[in-house]
Length: 124
Image (cartoon, rainbow, N blue to C red; front, side, top):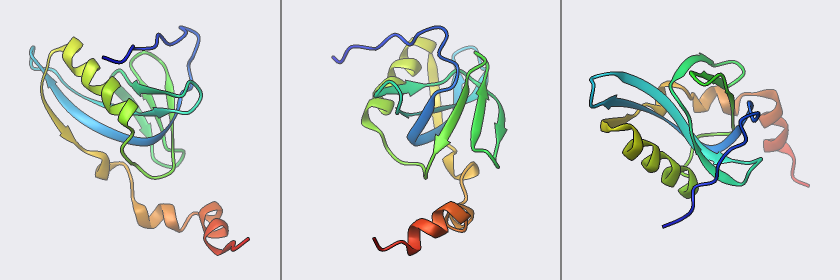
């Protein structure tokens, strides 16, 4: 079993790559959505508390804990993030989960972003 890294309590703005958004139902019937992925600052997998607000323009998710997650690049699959996610599900009594990432990411919009346009045409 891999060790779970404790995140400093003052760490409020994680940046995730290869991220996913999941909708869960807990044993008590509560449904919520969460983000998980690879935390580039701590080089570790991360799973969030419930998303309270999502800004599609900035690609940020503000969670119940007050953290603001910056989602970098397109969604993906981070093994460490998945491990953190499954651990979070086990601890919190998740009885069902559904991947809803497609509701938060439009690949056409991402590819049309000016910064991405410059990268696509840069052949150096």
